[in-house]
Image 1: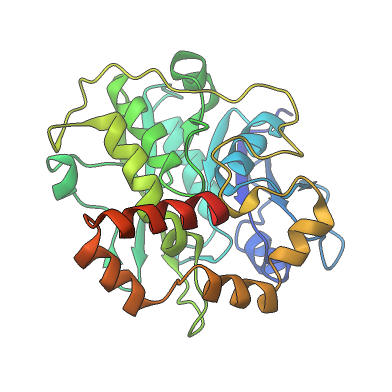
Image 2: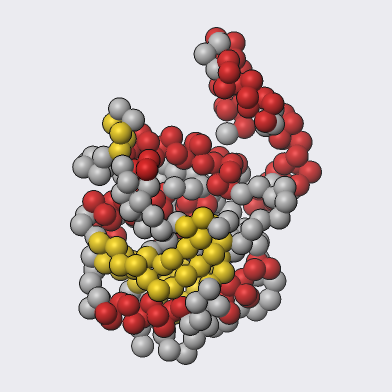
Length: 294
C-alpha cells in the first residue's frame, strides 16, 4: 500500500516526538512522519517514522523532509502542535476523498496560536485568505517548484502557499483543529529571531510599493541536490557552521547568551537603533554586527 500522507516535522526537541506521533497514530490511514533536526531521538521511533540527522537552517529542513518523503499528500507541522481533533489523519483522508483527490485543493486545518485564530483573511496581504499548514498534493510541486532557498527560518512556507494560490489552488477548510503550545517563559523561538529578516525577503518577492500582489511573476531560487543535508544554503543565519560539533557549541545556552551580549541583542539597543538608524555611524556599526553574526 502506498503512503497517502507524509507529515514533515523539523525539530530540535526530540522529547516531544512521542506525543507528536501518538496524536496522529491510526490504523485507518497509511502515513509516515519525518523528523529532521540536529539532536538524536531519545527513544526508538515507530516503523513509520524516519529521522534525518541534519543541522542545516530550518527552511532547508522542510525542503529535506519533502525530498525524503513518499506520500501522495504532504503537510508540514511544528513539533509543539496539539491536535484538538481525535483521529485527525482519518478526517484528512475523508476530506481528500470528498474532494476527489483534486490536485488543486489545499486542505486547511483550523488552528489557534495563543488563542488567536490563524484561519482568517490577512490585512497585510490585501485580505487574502492564506492557508496555514495545509495538506497538499505532492504533484503541485512539479508546477511551482518547492521552497525558496533565500529564506532562513520562517515564512518560506507562506511563500510556497502563495505560489500555490497563484497556480489556481483553492482552500478547503478542514474539520481538523490544532492549537500551538504556549512556550516556556523566556524561551525564544526561531520566529522571534528571524521573522523580521524573512519578512523582508517575502516583501521583496510579493509587494510592489508596499502593496501585496498575487500577480507578481515569481522566480524562486530553488535548492539543488548538492550537500543539502550537511551545509546550509546562503543566507545561513546562525546555521552557518558546517561542522556538527561547532554547531552544538555555538548553540549552547552559555555561548548563545554570550553572543547575545556581543550582538547588543536587547530591547534598549533595538529601540536606540530604530530611532537613529539613519545616522551614518549607526549604519556602519549595524552593518558590522550583521556581517559578523548574521
